[in-house]
Image (tube, rainbow, N blue to C red):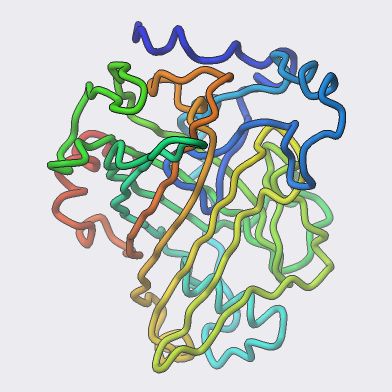
Length: 333
């Protein structure tokens, strides 16, 4: 067992260890979780209350997630849209379809998002800097929700199955590495591959619901939530902020995602699989990573800066990801 694991905070008690615990949307590199006491609406005004909340039930790490699907969940009925172009971005439903076409697709194909990430450490009163590289990939599939499992959903709701796979890289060579010294705390990091799965519902007027952990996103399916999509020259740029809106164990943290592609491809109903560039910025508490050598008392944060692109076939993955990721985890394809 990794010695660094001895430094991680005690596991959550009770139902917080349910194996269906969730994660991400645009999550990347295993970010989540953190301090309820510094929730989205600010920290508690009572210092004694804050201290009392440092118990087991308020702490979790980024590795408390289901790692793989076990019942062929990725093989559900593919979800397809009736309209595939000429979207009115001011209309909530058509805005939603444009977002899905930019980030995924509207014709039932599996989508892959290979990424390269630079992970940095931020410290309160000391200089931070580069810690790791990461090669990662999302595998996404939009499916038709089972009405028995998800009754009462608006027509047009899509169920998104998601697999995330990440391998850590030496930041100087950007090649896979198993051990590396953390220059900010002097600990030897015994690096673990980071993989998880998640499920969420994508509503036809925008908004979403994470199935395993509602506190991360539980939007009203009947309330319009159009995404911010801006015309930028010949391109469209989609801005997606994090879904961590409510106080809870996941705070404090944030994510910001941007997607950019050719406007003509988004609007052309005959172009079904479009090329899209992806960028991600996220921050979470360093103690969430059990191998990084931090405890709950440490205040360091991890900052992830990622770049990626969307493809719809394993053959179109970058050669680097084929070598270091897909060969090791062929089930993620």
